[in-house]
Image (cartoon, rainbow, N blue to C red; front, top):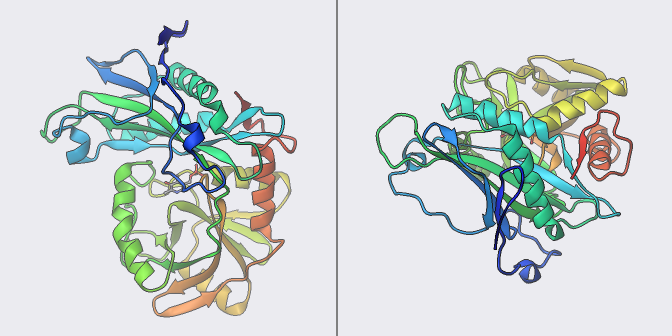
Length: 355
Ligand SMILES: *Cc1c(COP(=O)(O)O)cnc(C)c1O
């Protein structure tokens, strides 16, 4: 059955729902998807009619440029449900602006905001039952754009598709992690695509991360590509350090992804008068702080886990333990953020958007 809404969005509903096949108590993150997806094709120099269709495989020519030249960008965001059954997004405009910023860097066309807003809203209404209430439950939303033009010519594509797919998620608690400071490999370089959420940035991370895993680490702390003297990110998260009572993080640059969790933590910290220092952070000063006991906490920040506590840091052949505090800054900011996301507290910055 097809309908076209007044905003031009065409909807084809799935003939039946798969929701009863899902064990919501035991969700394997990122493997299950809801009944519908959003798709909008770009051709002849413009975005065509946006659609919502049943979730399922897509057909692409084997020469589609995304397979050969990696022209692909994505986003990661979440929808949350409160005890009354109301659904909320957290700063969705930030994800919209960022996917277009990423797309621009990969020579892909700008996506219209009206299509994104309408598509996301309708998708979340259609598949609303897939969003379970309760702290930790959420719907992970993955917008992405791929180059679909059939051609192995090495230049940007003339055809693209913008998709949004959704996957139910449970509270993601991987335990505290041990991270190795990069002294050879890099995630991104000056003048490169590090600030973009580009698929290739992830592909480039897997191999060095596997080498770190062989040494017993969970993730890598990325450092600047030219000198490896400055700390930049932790795995696929932004990184925070607490030295004595000061919260430190590196400034956003062309090599660092401008995380929404990172900037939300900084806004909360400012409002609550924490001591904050946003500046280039030397590996040497972190090692020194770990040795003299002034390094009180280290954590990563990103949408998937909100905050991931770091319990140890490796540098060259040395390992340093980092305290894991039951009532530290990490727990404090995690609670403040999730309380806002689940509509359990005031929202002084108007970050919540009700669907
Ligand atoms: C997505 C991502 C982050 C976190 O961004 P959020 O907006 O907080 O989810 C941090 N670093 C990298 C490299 C990322 O890809």
